[in-house]
Length: 510
Image: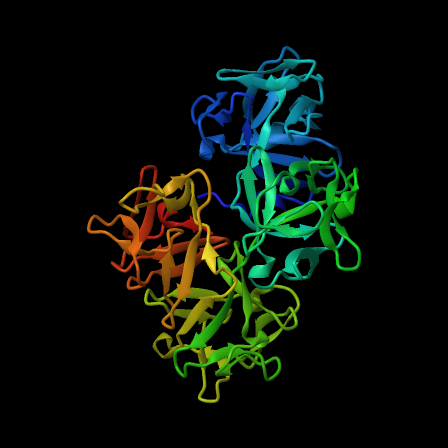
């Protein structure tokens, strides 16, 4: 299962490498493809699937990139123009380094020049080579980010995240709390637009507009070397930057790229509230640093960000109020005192299959709350553990993605409103959380999801009667259990509620 978390402008495999997961589209509108046999590459892909996914690895010392296939092999070229994709990381040489250049016609297309020989990489169908000394349409590529489109956007210079504020997008938050911190990267006609949670597009003048116009479209560029990141260039040749004391994102100021014009993209973590099933109270730190389940109303101190730790397969919980993490203390209590993630601030979260979870601390014991609401972890008996209901609050809607595409309606005009998971463009699924930890799910046709007799998924109900259960499975991954008790399963040509277990076919990027 692909995720965008490790190839999305993040450091990966060491501090000297930044990576961008992309699809490369040639002048014939075909995708560069790495076949799974023989290390062969061609430019004949019809869509952006797994074989058409490439990683551009930036170098933090030089303005060059490496181009890696989904098989982990790198593109290289000899002086005669022959292109291969066989080398592994420990075999890389100068002839595997490419300099990125940008088309001068405003289309936003990229050219890749081999550093060693000076030839440009291009081609059509099975004729992919690196031979031309000049750039023509054959050597120009549209670069499409092959990531989940719903992200957090962070300004490199200010070290702050972009959020919707006062009808602007401002780079002002240390942690992008709430749905206002979500940005949708809208790809169309080879260019990108930045879409807010309320369905508006960022205009080059810093305003937000309802319709997608030319002034709201940007081309992408990357910068390697000492300062790495992604830049957005508007239709007038200016780069988006964070302007003034409010750090408002707008163009029209700089035609060169500095730190204030560079951004990184990061996965959006789930932000949640937790309810104890013992006393129906919200978990909070309202009374100080101690974690307690004793609040009847939601407040800032009862909101937490769940962050997945891949090595341990556990979760940390960051507080909204003071940006600290839950921590297991020596007396068995849980306090929000950790400034960084460590073993004592990592917790196991186990779904019980009914909308509740059991949370386990680093000492192996389960969390439970006393009658006073105080939450402790010195209980060895799992049967007596408190079960908690977790409700996500920063995603009023989901964009669900698998290796085959996005989840959405098969056809907007069909009499049978069938849902599929192989759409090339993203669709939106609205969530209506219920008190028992489950959700009603609604499609863009304003109809609720249901499961048909053949276990296919439909959006055909006027009322929410079929609740679905969302279970967090890792960084930006979840599984969805249907009302029939089966997991939603995605395959090349089917989207059905038939999954018996958690595997790659029942995991969904969100």
